[in-house]
Image (cartoon, rainbow, N blue to C red; front, side):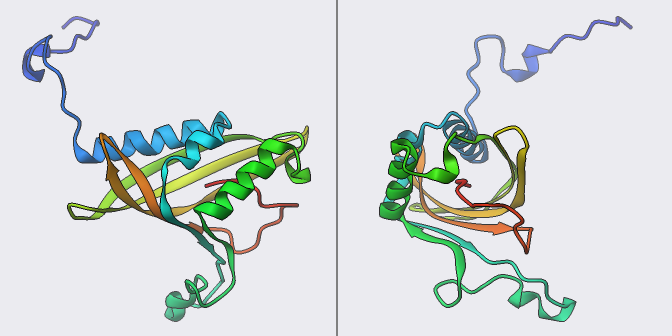
Length: 186
């Protein structure tokens, strides 16, 4: 047996075959592209990924007993939330960041967004409900390091060959944030 490995392209449809991505691969590519936009601070392009009626919501996490898991996160449109925004308020946040008016992001943070465990939960002709896990690493100045971990549930709508985000629900695993600010997009 040779120590060098080769890929048997005959089983892949030959060298000239073009792989057609599955729906899940298209969704994963979309989410990876979104991470790239955020990490490169291309916020205007990132905003274009959202529908005009988009909703961006991050509830508070609470420590609850095992028999009360339904109360682990604050309720949508009933309780306080870290974020409860629409596209207009997301645009306002982006304008603050770009204009240098946001003292908590002067200088800008460096971020790395990683999404994984992507699963399509529901699919119709007009929408997909997608769950994924995320890690967001944030570094600012010399010693400020933040790490966010959690789950996202996105409602995506087809937009040509790609998608747009109609709704994003962000569930942090942390119940208490020990940071000076919360300016990161998830």
